[in-house]
Length: 96
Image 1 (cartoon, rainbow, N blue to C red):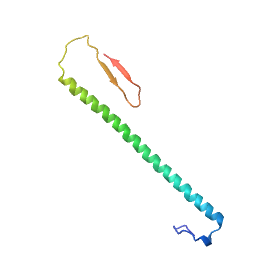
Image 2 (cartoon, rainbow, N blue to C red):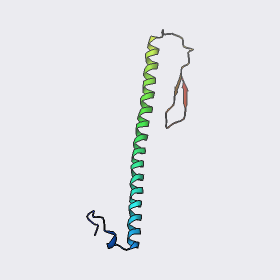
Image 3 (cartoon, one colour):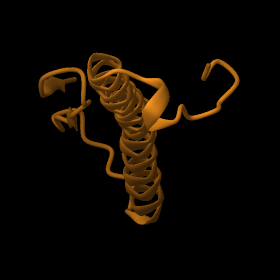
């Protein structure tokens, strides 16, 4: 009847068959949209993670470039604070 994409004529089907067909069509559309939304959401999360890593690397490069212009101080009492924030970890503070 409609196996090969032919939409059935209204006279060929009973009312229950029409209800089942329409329910199936609606269900297939909902599942397809749900799949599309999940694929797009997963791709968006991957892009956002890559952007976060890129921003952290760029900030580190800028800080290293700025540090290269500063005068070198030879003092053993200096304490350095390294502060990094990763999206999958909490804030970590370490000192030398």
